[in-house]
Length: 458
Ligand SMILES: *Cc1c(COP(=O)(O)O)cnc(C)c1O
Image 1 (cartoon, rainbow, N blue to C red):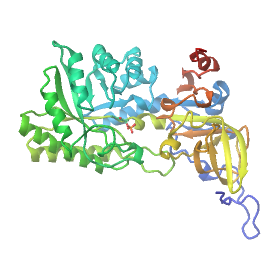
Image 2 (image 1 turned 90 degrees about the horizontal axis):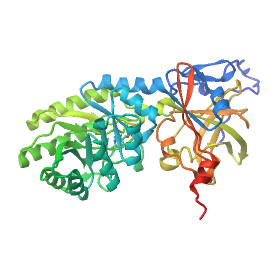
Image 3 (image 1 turned 135 degrees about the vertical axis):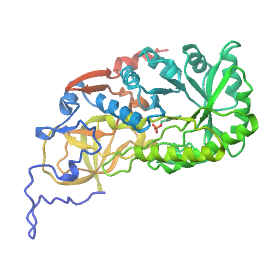
Image 4 (image 1 turned 90 degrees about the vertical axis):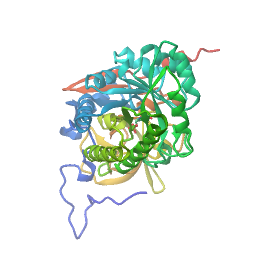
């Protein structure tokens, strides 16, 4: 779909075109970029004091830029909004050794769900006792590694792993665990990221009694110490209400467990899924409102049930790292096909599968040259051999967009690099941290040599 340029630069008899020396406002909204983002001459932007076009030149494209201060300030915002809670960063959103160190230094814990995430965080010096192991299908190696390194909690997600964790803990050992409960709450930005309802693969159902059954079995294992219930109801949630409903149901379950088994739990883990804006004007979850609502709901429900208020645990992933990342691409081709204007870049679904997976929307922006051209509607597509390789559908770009231009895509810090593939053997992009006017490479680009080496040639 092509929209007529709203800033008529072609002249109009009745209304003379405004004399533009700056990009039109709709092409110049920085509200979802990192807080440190600043405009530079010639249409460039800087993040963390480093010019983005310069980074594209130095490291090549596509490249992912991560603003260290934005990550740290988001950690601090969480700790301030939830002073009594334990805040765990969900490593799957993005993990590198530097990221693990920032999270550690900011006093957060870490959610991991594989040997790979565990070992990388451990190699970065992250304290294992502040890690929590998740996963609906933990391998024996995952569990053994978690126990060997001494992770703080293991979240039980299915009945079959209860005896396995207990056995691997050994007769003299004792491992803290939680039980992941499906509270029957539907929330989240897309069907594929709703994890709080029955009929999806995670957790143990409250409605069919499997949660209660698993809890009884955990309580019967002397090697396991059940510290509390866990739930994670979905992702990209922008409203506090589903969390309050989940709290009410989990407290209801805690009351029944107290009646049946005489135990109360010191913790309640409410998972993550806190939504952030990816485009200017998108809704985002208000943390202060969430903290207030959770606190009130927990106090009321626990008082009514005669339970002590457990310490809450929350697990934000994208809300910590997504807004700290900016992806930079080079435009390789611009093409009109019927009514569509396709702008094809040198990355795509291999570095960002989110639009294809669950319809994520982005707002790319031209950087690196100035233009006063009015906006046109365009579809930014990747270079891969799939028609579904669309990075951003129906977005506004300057009407003179052309090959060689640079595009910056904000809110690119979560579930992009961590989900990247080597589709079409293009190699996964590098990650560069920016801070105080300096850039440093965290993860180098995957080379042809890397790709070749895995193919042992048999
Ligand atoms: C994915 C996940 C999170 C983080 O989700 P976000 O949407 O990134 O906040 C937290 N906890 C668990 C168990 C998860 O699976």
